[in-house]
Amino acid sequence: MGSLFWRIFATFWLAIALVAGLSLLLGQALNQDRWILAHHPGVRGVAAEWTEHFEQQGPMAAQDFLVQHKHRQHADVQVLDETGEPLVRGTFPPRAAAFEARQHNQKRLPWRRLTEEYRSPDSGQTYLFIYRIPHQELAAWHRDSLLWPLSALLIAVVVLSLLSVLLTLSITRPLDRLRGAVHDLGQAAYQQNSLARLSSRRDELGTLARDFNRMGARLQDLIGSQRQLLRDVSHELRSPLARLRVALALAERAGAEERARLWPRLVQECDRLEALISEILLLARVDAESSKSQPVDLPALLGKLREDARLLAPQQEVRLDMDAGLHLQGWPELLEQALDNLLRNALRFNPAGQPLEIGAHRDGRHLVLEVRDHGPGVASEHLAKLGEPFFRAPGQDSPGHGLGLAIARRAAQRHGGQLLLANHPDGGFVARLELPLSDSAEV
Image (tube, rainbow, N blue to C red; front, top):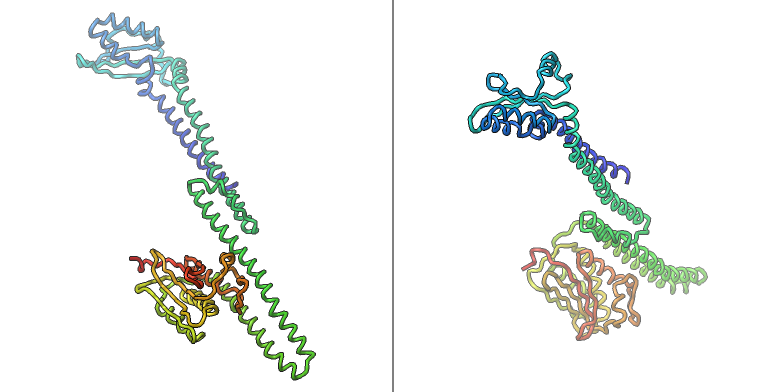
């Protein structure tokens, strides 16, 4: 989590440094005359109190106030009128005043000189106050007055640093877990519980983990199904190849008459092998379909399938019952192949004299395409396995390879629906494709 961790951490530390810099600038601002006049105990409120003593009790009381104030706060005060003449003697010694007058550089003085004009609210008279605070006294006051802000700043820096570390780790650790999950997925060793704690979060990272879990589960299912399909294909291909090998071996040792008798068998096995490979390729094509969906003309599609069924089994009666105004967005070729497999399967088991029924109806927000025969049905213990590749229910003599229902199920899933297989309550077998309707079909 190197670079991302340090980028986020550096960003927060930059913000902290900015706050610290502003605090230093604030500290310098605190050293200005206006701040000192408003907050230093040696000058704060002195002008108002002195004016009250001077105007109500006279110059002697005002002078005594300044002397007592110097003993308490160690700050000298002079008060001048509007013409610049002193109103009282003040507390600044004449010798110190002479020394100050000789110094052209005020920074060399041992005290800080501050001035303040004050207008009396009672008499309207304006007074000029000159304060002199020793630098040593002023520095001690600065230390005491800035101790709390500096302590608060230090605490803020520590707290912000801890929060930065926690926030940074809360982002980079989940990303590190996701990186490990991606690595495991690439190695086909992904475990869904590896992101269990992360997926329980309610923020964006939790959403990402849940989406990744769904993607990983889907990919694992696809990989597992492909591996199983490969094993099933290998098993299914062995039987026709073995029969072909035996027939060829017999043909090599047989005479002309025997070869003529074996030749139809060789052709038959080649046809079976070709049909099996075609169904396998069709199943793979259903999984790999990536084209965009398009409107499906259901009446034309079902009508074509009905005519094809009549050509395959002219003796069978095929009934079509379809609601009007049905609209479906999907892949017409996949849907046709799925329904064709369902019809062919039904034609194998539907007895003569009984109709084969095709239905298309609206059921809420779904389109239901139904194919029903009146055959013997399937044992209940085998219903759950119907639709798995190469599975054929025992006790049924069928020339298929067990891929028709698998193709129909994959096509239904590609359309966002499902294939339901069950025995009909009134007898026979029914296959239902439940597909979501497009918006134009909703009432």
